[in-house]
Length: 223
Image 1 (cartoon, one colour):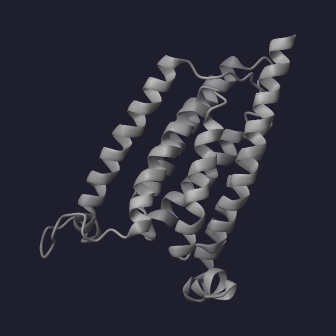
Image 2: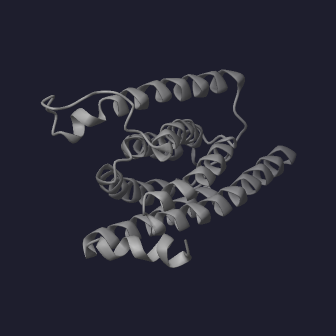
């Protein structure tokens, strides 16, 4: 399979609105990561636009886990926006720290609860796809492919990462890096080439963000 088959051919069957939405979602998502690297509060308004667009896209492509995580992102972005505004001296930038043991416990709980919740949602996916009717529907996980199972896993990774991000914790970038790497082949498999390229860019930016936040913390500690 060549690059054309992977990245261009799937879009031959998409309408203009679908392509435009995915493009704008990717642009605003990239802007959001850029602002997060800079510890700039604009990470949240740009992120909200991107996540709301992807709620629609991912639901239509059957990636219910990632769809739900984008709903969660939208809600958590409002929470994070409030926290960053309260903890910012200039109402734009924030200081960052490493997570405490207690926060790691909370993050692990979120991860496990997410695994359970998204798996249950996929169990009921045939019912959801059948317009919430049990007529002719068989519940179960038999319909899941490897991308769906990865969706369950990455949803939990991103949920914990988003929580750490709202808390201004450096570890958030570790979760972004792992989740982004997994999403690259997953999105190609689902025919979302633009989004897969976005996740490649996200991976590079997440590495830069991790390095930048670590450096910022060290410089703050020296002062």
